Image 1 (cartoon, rainbow, N blue to C red):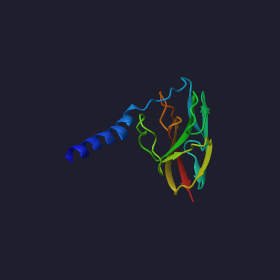
Image 2 (image 1 turned 135 degrees about the horizontal axis):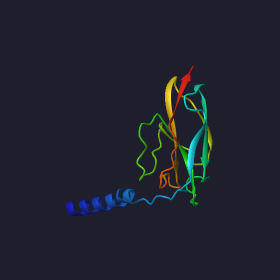
Image 3 (image 1 turned 90 degrees about the horizontal axis):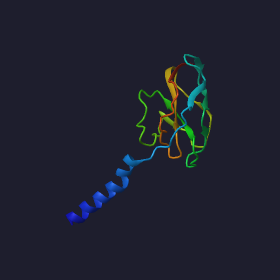
Image 4 (image 1 turned 120 degrees about the vertical axis):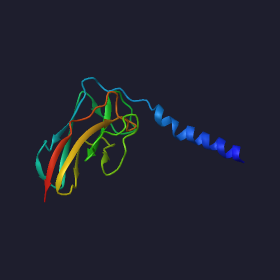
Length: 143
């Protein structure tokens, strides 16, 4: 019984865990540039905040659709460090996915200073090689 359990555990670990380390990253265009069009760095805004994404040198495609030199936007809100570039970008309150190919959003933010940054993910939400990421901006939200 112990061997049966152990063999199944090893199989499951190999099936679910090991492939995460073997994810192939999509190649990004060398001239790709990702940026936030608005708001601008240092801007004072009120909530809800409209955020407009910009991308040059590559195209936008929905998640799950694999085309060369394309990806979709992920907005990082108050994130200190980029997510692991070898894994799919997390999806939570600090990592917003725009897998339908959206190029803008409106979000609610509490009053105070916030950082915003974009990272492009491929059809599987994995950052490209090289990583296509915007400059981090800071905004101040007032009531």
